[in-house]
Image (cartoon, rainbow, N blue to C red; front, side, top):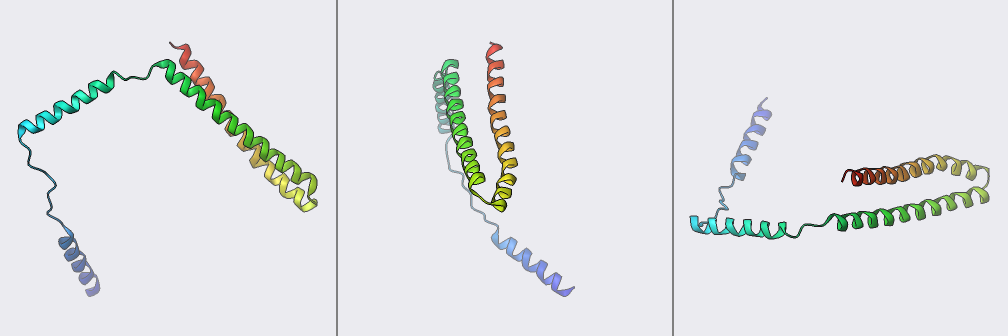
Length: 130
């Protein structure tokens, strides 16, 4: 019981010592604050004029989609080829390991290409809403 009280007192002392009274506020006049606020609003209005057009956004989305789809196809083909070569060249135990690897490979392909399909469907539906 005495050890608990000592521990609590030590923690309280450490907490009191670690409390810092540093103030990070700077002294600005009201006019300076208002000028900075006006400058902030002007920057926001200027950037509002630089809105990305729908065509640019659509082109960017299609480019990203096509790049990721090609990368996914290349990776799927390479992994499938590696698994196929291993299956043909390995012995009985190796074939069993490759067969166990086929299920995660197939699930991965379904997930990846399913995601691309969902992406394309969502983009097509949203474009049709215009």
